[in-house]
Length: 561
Image (cartoon, rainbow, N blue to C red; front, top):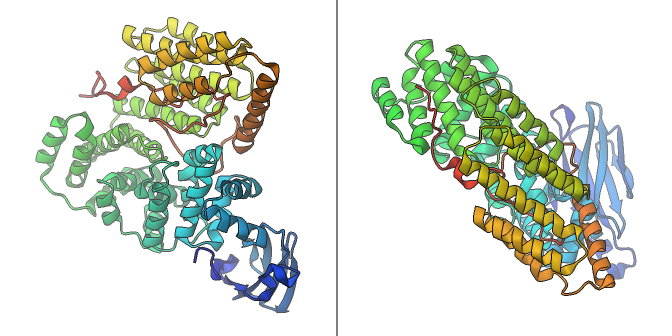
């Protein structure tokens, strides 16, 4: 059964409540008064209980009864005990019917659920309380299949949602390692959302809620997570997350103690030789293998091994979670122990860019622009860093932000400003050509929106498609092809007016889901690969990353000694 009949929720002060759905004829439409009734029993006495749009009675000091009318959706029950106040979600008849219909493939019901919940992330937290874990994953699959906007939104926020569920009492229970893995793997299996790493979710939650290595160990134990097993499942990345947490919360000595608990597979000299000989993509793994055996070396030697392990793990990982930023933070701590400017500079620079791409994926454009500006400022501090990458990507994001606000003229101006800024920097010729081609494709796409002439619109779209194809931006090519297929063959005013109405409606929907100048409370992280973009006549910008394919094709030219 997808919808639970009985479930427990935590209460303040370590107490808990048991919610029971009271099944009976009152749930049948033919009864003349279709309602849903719930009884909420607690291990503490209630001080106050209120439900928006529902009737609440108190049959006992430690119990309340809630009756929800036929039109009630997901309803919030506010409960106060002597230890504090909490909120529970109850599925009213309308919500229950929409959930069943959505799971049966009704896209209208799925979209209604999302809209009434206030977005797909809010739906995940609310429905997660009263659905089974497989049922929640099936529901998220249904709502993202029914709406491109919901798919975009959950793709951008999937790590924030899962981390929030693991690090707080909101949403479905995440009490055991099996719970954590089942939910992460269930979301990972949703085609429209994107990959999810269990180790990244656990690592980010651990960093979020604990500020000591001992606290981290307790957090993992509370959720039944065995660190070494999770590290093995993640090819050692979780081990790097543990080291970074120890280094950033309690310094190098704590990281060294963490390393001593890990088995060493070879001598330090052998591990160091292997790490120094490893190719670009294997370097993180090789340096991680050197860290446990470096724990009995001097602090300087250990710091060097740790700094390299954390930096190169983050450098080649480039997932969508916050874990890369955390690893770069740890690399900075270790690098400062030995005054290793290359590690410090590159780690700070890449950390800022990772943060920027996280906000870019979440469509919090202003925060992304600020982070790219931080990266540019960091690059100016060291001669071995280049400022042109963040300058270029910042221009793309600034253009997207202007278009998201409906100001396509300003979007073109942002591209022109970016081109002017890059012209003053020493960008390699091949890279400059790629960047300018991207700017030109974006400009054509916006010109196509601004023109009222069908022939000019098609000409701009054809030019944009050719330039995106030249760059290898496959999703952008697909988007342009869909725009071309949807373009009217003539300039009929009624047709164009209808398109503009749909443009305004779609724009308003997306803006309601994600503001351009604020980040979600629990945001996710850098999208350095293609991400999902809604297919719509007004869609602008490239769903392909501002980081072009050639950027990560191999190691940097200025490797540290």
